[in-house]
Length: 347
Ligand code: SF4
Ligand code: SF4
Image: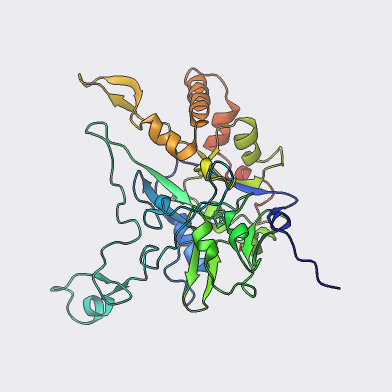
């Protein structure tokens, strides 16, 4: 009798779904999440160029470089969109620095620290090359930070694309690549519209964020979420009515997926940034936000209008001394309220 070959629908299904919410009003671009992830998962040979968790300045090209231009995901009819592979250079390469020369070579007064690419050249682009570059005219310039990782999508394009059925969802909704099954075709790299899959040239296999599942299985939140010093992040099961992710996504509807039009049903949700108000021509504060609404709509879809309306209304309530459960949720006075069942200590 031949063994059962799982269908793509079976590979994409899960009993429950873990989700992350990131409040972009509180993210300060400190990169603690990036470093927490890098220290644990991508220090291995062949993974040096990867950042499974990253933070980039918006609006900007983002990370990997210009990832929104790479295609992938699905079109409005649910058909796969062609995508392209990211290169190691677009993922930030593996820069080397002349530490020896400057710190121990006796040249500290005459030389400065300089990066070189893995091929020994002067870099022309790197991770966060456009960090803190604002858009808009003074005095109404603006930018905000976008923290990203794999979205552990409910309709994951990477699962559909894998010719080896090496990618699947676990029962908790985490999407993983079976390294024993992967043969490095990289169809998944092309299919992910968020450019969240990386190729390891050492192992010749594809890799991605595993949502720290060895921690999650012990009740510990993923490192990017737990280490966030800005208390921007909530974590838990979407169907748990007590979890902050449920309250922010399902109840208050103020946390939205990034680029929902890509059709993969992502499970990282964002509380959109409430713009500082713009100055008018006389230098007075106007009623209009600095970040153009069409810009926010491009990132988060048309639901961003309703989400921002709710956020502003609830903020006004607090300003006049009323209570607001939503504002209390977002302030997060107790850090561990944000992580539902995932508050165990990693130590
Ligand atoms: Fe797959 Fe990309 Fe979705 Fe992650 S973000 S599950 S890699 S399609
Ligand atoms: Fe933003 Fe938190 Fe990451 Fe710092 S650790 S960059 S505040 S998401």
